[in-house]
Image (cartoon, rainbow, N blue to C red):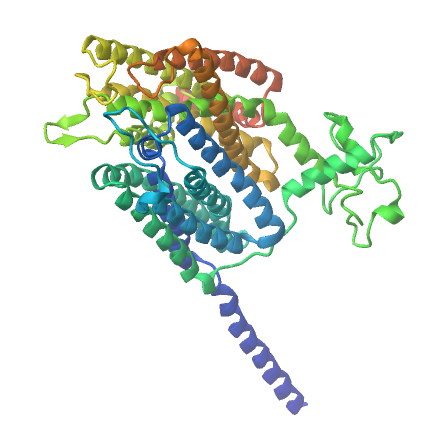
Length: 593
């Protein structure tokens, strides 16, 4: 008996020893140690990418002899591709590659993209010869030269498609360890640090990379982003042994496609007993009994036709392309329901995409801060970022508490209200842009610079600051409002779709902005007239073009009012009413005291 006891004790000790040795192995993966590498990867990539964008229209017009409209169209298509590709990257990451491999490949491809763009500046044969100012002739870029330029943009878009959709989620994978409240706090801190690093990256790009391009030329100005992209890739792979690498699972996009396909296959089915819980397939431990009545045509995707054939032994669907769960149907319904309100953000994104015009305006105006210090024309977007950051910092900590104190009860703007305010502010930003351009153009004509687009007017470029600040406020209200709206309306399983919808909106906006500018250019230049969006800023009428965008934004605001009324109250309003009741109780308690 004693020997048996000893043997049991030894075996218990061995098991406990094995257990203690196994726990560290599991805990070695992930954790805070991986955060600097993930944030460095994203931050260096953002500095490099945003450092290339502001001055790119100048590069295309001066080095490739492109007109304003053609150059802008290339940039619009680049922006559209850069925002479409993350959706494809998210699908590949979720379904096949996993987040680690997707980010790694995206980082390597981004380095190749910046190298290709740098080569267009380094190799003289990669660009057309400079324009002959005496003869007034300019040679266009040949096909091979344009192919190298466009391929660099395409490769950069593919790289962004790998990094952008996965970086934040990959960081969350390293910290997600059960339901420990401490882990939840660490995760929130990571999200805050992640977004703060993005904002800092954009500011650094505006204040360091852009001035370098202005003062040291394109070879140095494009060479630095190459080094930054290389550091971004290296920093990510350095911590490879420490990462938690989740395997690829089924993508939400695949689930949406399956619901549509199965609903179409079952379109001729007749539902006899709609309330029967046995009629519909649902996931394990699901509280849903039947799908909602909205968009009933999709409900046929979760109908069990033959339990023996459709349901596997573990309770799941035998073939997901023949039977879907109620939850999958409701996820697709939630997405379809928000599409009208999502579409109102497209016009706001079009307003943000008009960065080339203010750049040319700033270059034609006095940008001196003091006599010896000049503000870079491409860095005025800095005011948009600063305004956005200040508003976000003050909104929850100062403005709402102050408003709640004045009213005596909790004050909070709903997500839909903030989206609407953002649309209104973007419209006002365009109105201010129109007024400033009208003043600038009249001054250019009065000072005799109508035929000289390179002349600097006796007018401060800081007249452009108000429109940039209004755009920053518009983005703070609209973009953040959209994200909050999606997160409140979507199930937790669809949280990644919120960011994808924002990117998709920017992509669609870029394509529409290209179409609008091309149409305006073609229509207003007929009969040998000078185009509203002429390459020569003092000959064109950018103010007329801005007025067109103002009118479109006004109609978009009316469209938003209709969409918000049609949508009805959203999920957050119930919580808001509860908060108001608590506030009333708090006020009554104070009065009693």
